[in-house]
Length: 269
Image (cartoon, rainbow, N blue to C red; front, side, top):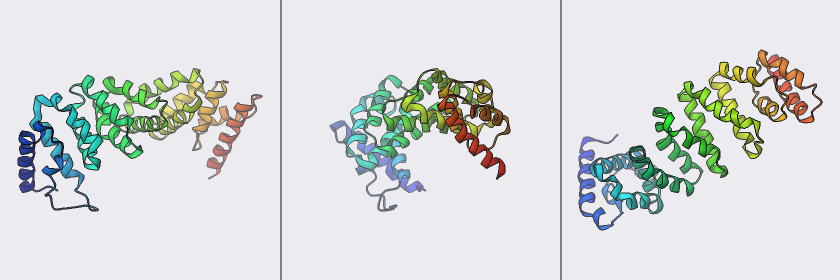
């Protein structure tokens, strides 16, 4: 934990940097915290970087739009410390001017690896989703439906984390996904299965409602979706799956047979 003395030192050095370095295009913000003595695995703790980033945002105040090149350089040129600071700054600013900061944020996403992408979404978008889902759910849906596999994977993970924290949003999120079931899902199929599994774990009652709504379907894709989501014995779905195992459709029969084996195994466990 940062001591009061170090907070005062970082405040002072951040102000000096803003007044005397940044106006001249000096983006080497490390000068603010390089003197901090403690290291974790040879690196300055993230707590320090986040504190400095918070101080910078506070001191920049209403002039934050003037420093877009600085934020961009933090992500592109300043390594792990810069990426940590960028994420913290975006978490403070993106909601203030979405039209300005979402393009900058998504440019960073486009050049992020898996762990960086997950971290950006967790730190910047997840808090916004929890607070104002009506404003940011479409953005999250866009990520989960991306043709870019890495973004699709992390966008789906973002929605799963959201429904774990906002169970009241499960119907809204599932409505979005189920609307797509009338069309071929192709490579998106695993994402829908994963979402169904997450719903089953978080809200068994709503998962049963999905089965009530679709359990009489003969659409092979819907049968495959529902059957692939089965991981536990649920007596209410046994009859539907057993019926599907006798289907004349090869896809339906195959999916149901696999799910029925899981049901029987869990039933006897």
